[in-house]
Length: 250
Image (cartoon, rainbow, N blue to C red; front, top):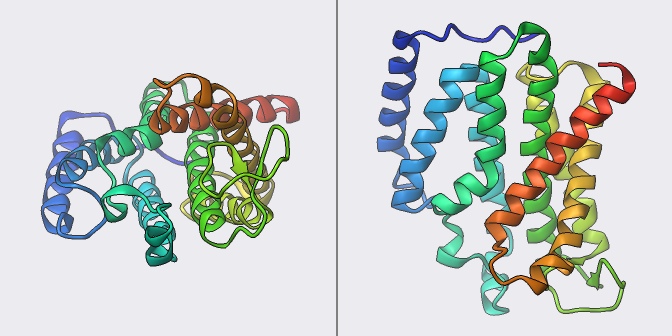
């Protein structure tokens, strides 16, 4: 089981100082907007403070992998009007849409009884694995998906339609979820191959659920933004992971 860092003021001051320094060095990278970097620094401080360097590094790698996937075929997606706004740079709303559930789980793990740490960390891993699965599926599907179908009716729709899926995008989602779960496994945040497979499977299921939400509720309710849907997706992944752990007995 991962040993969490001591929750004392000195540790949190170190977390704040390290993240402030790293953000100052990294903010020229074309990954986040200026305000996005500030919020990433807040997120990084929370993660280092609660889970230590392993939890922090896992999310840094998630951000790097997600940004890399977003830039695949960027020129083609821009020409077709399917690219992310701001040249793929993410803002505060993207940071917290992707990471709020994970940050809350990290804070719970730091304060919860020792016996809860394992399940909460698996839920943490599932939330970020689901988000990378979603990013991979969306970005690969928009660029290389040959037959794009609405998930609820399976009728053909244009690439980029809310709730659209393709074989290529779904395969990319599976790979992305398993890859992020592998990062979590390598860093010691989740135990063993069986949990790795569980987290990867949950990530794919949550991504498909997100497509259903996009095809139904998001098309009907204008206030249901992509960032809110992302937050719901990560929450679904975390809850599915906890339910699966309960069914298999921990």
